[in-house]
Amino acid sequence: MKKMLLSAALSLCCLTTVVAEDWGTVTGQIVVTGAIPEPVLLHKKDADIKDKAVCAAKDTYSEELVIDTDSKGLANVFVYLAKAPKNIHPDAKKPEPATVIFDQKGCMFLPHAMIVLGGQTVEVVSSDAVAHNTHTYPLKNQPINVLIAPNTPVGKGEKLNYKIGESLPIKVTCDFHPWMAAYWMVVDHPYAAVTDKEGKFTIANLPAGEHEFRVWHERAGYLDRKYAVKVTKGDVALKPMEVSVAKLKGK
Image (cartoon, rainbow, N blue to C red; front, top):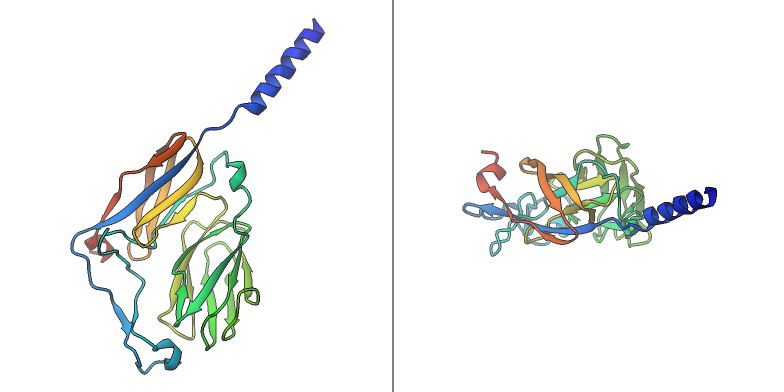
């Protein structure tokens, strides 16, 4: 009898370990409704600004509001879970890539909006022939303010590490060039994305079930604090989220 009970217990244990979690990959898009505004000129070519030979080598436009004229997609929108789900896909537990590159080119940050995973290293480099500094304004992590020498290549940059997830994207500035700004979303899980130039995003390997995402853009703050998504096994294509131009203008 004892042998039978032990055998049954072992069978139940093994069955439990091989039952696979269902995972889904979500794709979506953020689109703008209304008349698309013209890009905002920060400064013209040869403008009389600091380090003009580099910073005013061409007309420079604001990246605060980047809308694709064809798709009406809104770039640089953060879509992320406010907290880690109970289960995380085994392939997503280790940050990939281990290091992400944050560059400065033409006295603008590249990229303008970036996801930083917990345990991931940010390497700050510079493609510019002038000095910059990278100054972060986190809510939970320690602020960082580092000098970036001219023409700092990949592999020689300043390496920054964040381990604590933030509740909101954090602002990054250059104190030498006040028009420069970028945003990083630091998360302690892999379920976050930033929209591309067509407003599209993909979040892979989510556990099946109901999830609430936060959707945030620098011009309007939260576009949705409880963006409800039902994840099923396989690919899940979401209906595009529409955002009015008036909201992005703060009206």
